[in-house]
Length: 442
Image (cartoon, rainbow, N blue to C red; front, side, top):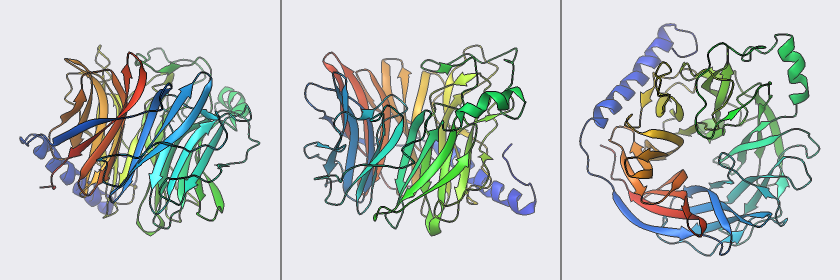
């Protein structure tokens, strides 16, 4: 069941969205040729551990951003392609303060591309968690000195950011924020947190590989900041008491619409997807809307969040991981998808994207290509780790396998998709990039 009033208008919207998904499911059962797979390219800083790649595109311009760690120092780099990902230029360091980045699986640097190139990342440059942002106005040849997107004096954990540029060039950054964590224990003891139980429930779902358990409440809220090209900044609260270490996702739509997605905590310890919408360019947000009642109950964080996108018609598309069957003893995750055709007020019943017979399907990322969403994720297939992809309405296919891979990212260009991921090699981690020539939507 989705959230919101079930009046005639809403039921009609849901019926329309359900019809879209029904057509997509029918298309998934059809046989389609596997998209042409281009050569695999490598991006890296020599002598460093390279990981945590994000990729974004605007027309033929594609930018990959990732972290390179040498010893105790981590920096952010960006490489630019002006030919839709066929080749990339030399990496350029993004952060002006040497070694100020902090990166892990659900906290890579994020990149967005429009007239400018903007990169955001997590930092502990002052010993306190911060979200930093730098902008390039010359196609990535150089980046301006970074700014902190929030009050730099805040305490508490901070990160798990996401980034998008709107049509006016303003950067929208969403992140998890622990500035109010000191109030959590008192709120939980007083029963003021609807999503958290004061005592652990008798039955909890098994923690997935890489997940994060906790024995006491760990408060994280969501904030969103809009940073214009002239540096003007505005911040808004999006939601409180959310799952504390799953990535966020932010998308910009027409007419000043901004959407933020995250894993919320519903009573009691149910970790479901939520979306909040802004109709005023990110200055204020409406209440969280539950995308799907998945029933995943656990006292901890899966460390695996959603990905959201908006197409030309304004439809809001979301992909996310959750337990495929909460009553199953295998406790396998699956990748799911839904769509909203009414500005994020209601969402259609979910559709599963992975094949259901694999382990560890995780870390989905969504992009819109030729008007239709495409989702990539990593999973453990029969031959080992691999990157899988699916355009809604068509069967899934393998984008890459052959070495340990994880955390893919994807961007759309006029000639198809470009996907990137982290690969583990005997010499350390490297960034791989591959073009996927996806044909026109049928």
